[in-house]
Length: 487
Image 1 (tube, helix red, strand yellow):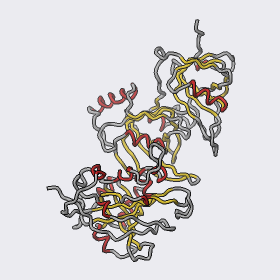
Image 2 (cartoon, one colour; image 1 turned 90 degrees about the vertical axis):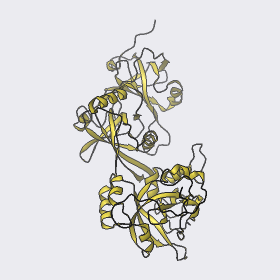
Image 3 (tube, rainbow, N blue to C red; image 1 turned 45 degrees about the vertical axis):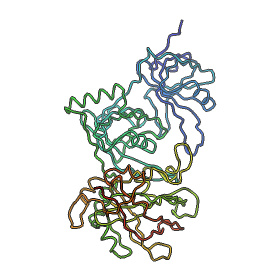
Image 4 (spheres, rainbow, N blue to C red; image 1 turned 135 degrees about the vertical axis):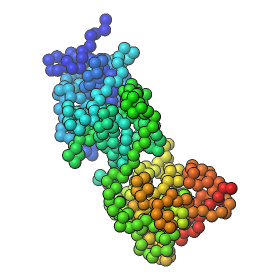
């Protein structure tokens, strides 16, 4: 006869022979400080009443436990010892339970059939509860469910020379309350891989085991630093399906929901910058003297195919003198309604628009290194505002080059500051001529901005040269782009 199991809420120091039947919700291996290897394996488990508890597996048992236990599996646990679920400052825990389960060498782990065990239950808190701190603190992890209504720009930064990324999104609950959510690094990749930000399908996001934090005097939510957080995006689970149905009832039709994209920390700065330095046409930029710094608005027609799209640079000064990591130096062909131009996108702006470092860009899915990654061409066909510095190339050639100092594709700024040659706002068409030349297949994905039969502009521009000063690379004279116009 099977032994009767205990509920997690009953566990305390009064006994030592506890036996629990649980589902494993999450497993993670935290690294603290400069640790290279985890000192423990952490688990979040749930019993059949939905009560959660934190479990810790010591380092010597990590390998054996990982062979037996998988996320979402159901197990009977015996012969463990009970400890207090206290945490150090700035650390979190998966449950507000006073006690936790600690594995030991003789802990018994028995896998069971999960047919009669309830599926994952979520501890969902409303946006209002988080904002008002109703039963919410910065230690105990929570679940938050909402409609994605706003996305800010990715913000790149570094910690001790290591590159990181931060993205702020805004979630809205069924009561129309909103809360800011900050995603970091791999969670940004997961979001972009699963969401079409140009589409109209509503995006419902459930963050399980996320952390509530105070930022600038207001409560926000964020994924945790050790990957405890799980992110469910439009998943076929009951809580998300019910949320979608409620949206349909409240709004009449939930099938269309546009996501607003705004520039996060740079919006006001960019507006001031654009107001003080009006947007010029490319034709005007070409006539300006060396040293000119102006904004242009143009569509990316192609990337110069070259192995020199990145260089090995120093973490501190960006010069190519120490092999501390690859940095972007992408030669990009841009056009507006007046002329073409070849501009150089450097590391900071490259990280901003691609959402990953040059090192990450070089590594292919199979672990090899790509000399010219296809992902570089993902910006083709997209319109940006570029702040350009016109300067002499650092190769004594007397030629001029055009370096990108800032870049944005904020739709509000594009609408406000796009100009036509005659002045005023316009939706400019790319500069073209009528020569007929076949094009390569790589240009076909650009879309309606360029005809599928056109000559790719990227084949007509030379590549930049790199020297010790990363921001004084050479760019050659700008030839005329030849593009075929379909009849």
